[in-house]
Length: 340
Image 1 (cartoon, rainbow, N blue to C red):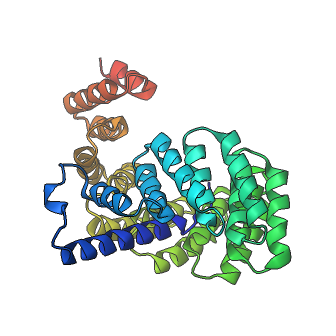
Image 2 (spheres, rainbow, N blue to C red):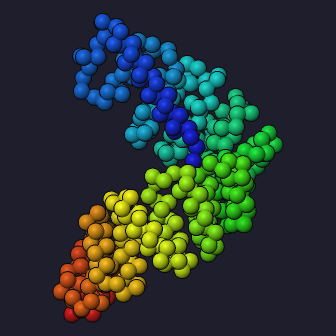
Image 3 (cartoon, rainbow, N blue to C red):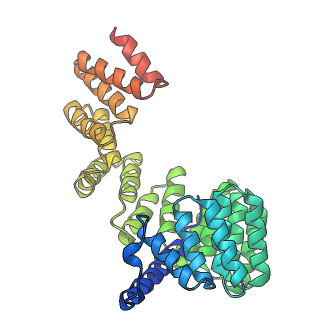
């Protein structure tokens, strides 16, 4: 579990703005060479053209680095970020933060620590840099160091919701679920719109078998009703806490709202199987296997439903299909042997 910054969204906004400005200026320029560009990604074409026109513009190399970072081309992203920093590193903490992210993604943790430590020297009071430093320490399992870094934020801003959210992750990884819950709770107290913190509260309390998890998932849904995973979490929590009728109702609504989200159909099929509603179980497992035909569990569970219904030929076919997709599925092997 890692902190959800808005930084990537900001990178994307800045990137689109620079692309727009370049297109706008090119359209006004009758000497534009856009129509002679080779067949590569238009975003990259425009960035390269912009750099050719203004090779000392550090922000262009930053946007180009982000372009490559999004496409997992980390080495190229590193080159462009270092170029941006060589032009101007004085007032650009975002450059260091993105470079740290790229280093981490490229499995260069030492370099990530070094670059964020350098950023802390240049920007000792920049909250986002301190958060990034603490996040990196968390990723490297340096929990006490991560908490010590966060304390720098709490001294300056004792109501910083993102810092409490990250503290929740740290405590959770340390096995201190009580302090994790308290930290996530403070995060939503100071920022009720922090959807990720509501989700984390739901997840932790679900693990603790606390039914309050349901209301926390609902708060997350109120903030974002287009994410099917949160509906899935809430429905599963309802079922886990014995509210089977409510769980079925939510799964049914969710199937209509998100008809391509396979876990809804699989879990609904599983509930029907538990309730011995075999035809409904088979119906929903069938949809699940159609939506995700490479997942073995859908075929295995449908095979169980067919077996309980006495349709052994179809059960055998499903067990065999499950084993073709996952040869390590021991339950399917056992079920298949019982049919012979």
